[in-house]
Amino acid sequence: MLLEWMDEREGAQAAEESDGQTQALLTRVMEEVLRREGEDGNVVVGVTLVDGERIRELNRAFRSVDRVTDVLSFPMVQGRLCDAAPEELTGLTDPETGALELGDLVICPARAREQAEEYGHSVRREMGYLAAHGLLHLLGYDHETEEERAEMRQKEEAALAACELTREGAGADEAPGAPCPHEKKTNA
Image (tube, rainbow, N blue to C red):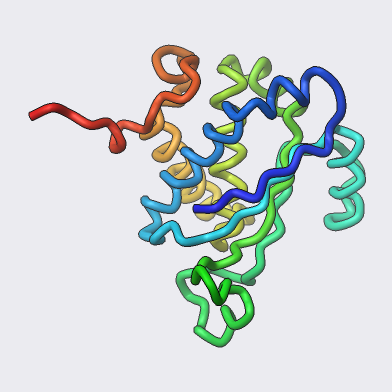
């Protein structure tokens, strides 16, 4: 998976979160979502970190909702990716690498920090959750009905659990760069 990373924020907080650990975390969670969805991982996802003012502008412009939100998803394919006809993917695949452009995520780390405190878990878990949630939208999942919401939540929680990003705030949740369990190598 190729992550096209951009940070539009300014200041010390932006520098702290752009040091590679956040990028590695989001990549790890998104790779787990893709693995669980049976995708080969030869995809490109754009991720942009923004401040509250910018995500509010985008939310207003694209969703007609005038408030700060946590994550916005801009998919390249309408509907479920797994149901897309080959002609729908024309022009979305890099001719050199064969990587499929899934779309873009815009994440507001300031909102993630607020929500982490509100929900009683780490910022790392909340950022991982937003990455999983946003990627599932890029893959065509939604939460308009209770059934859809439950399906998305199950997929989000499964990916987070596989990456040891638990609500309890213990273990790998606080350890930067810890691999997902399926990536751990054992000496046999």
